[in-house]
Length: 87
Image (cartoon, rainbow, N blue to C red):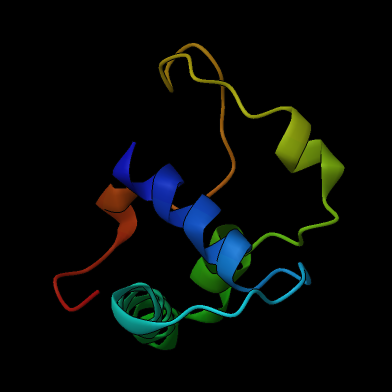
């Protein structure tokens, strides 16, 4: 579940959605999330990056997102168990 949430956060961060101005503590929070996502992405190999990042326009991925256990419904994304200690 941690991994799939991360996938969705990365999609939101790198989407083509309109930019909203934020200030103060909110801006610092946004910057820290973007920085953490970029740091993770920088550690991934091409295959991992391909599994982690989805286009915002990828309707197949967006509309088919289940909240059922992974064993019941396959999900896109990068599994936490596939990351190494540095990631």
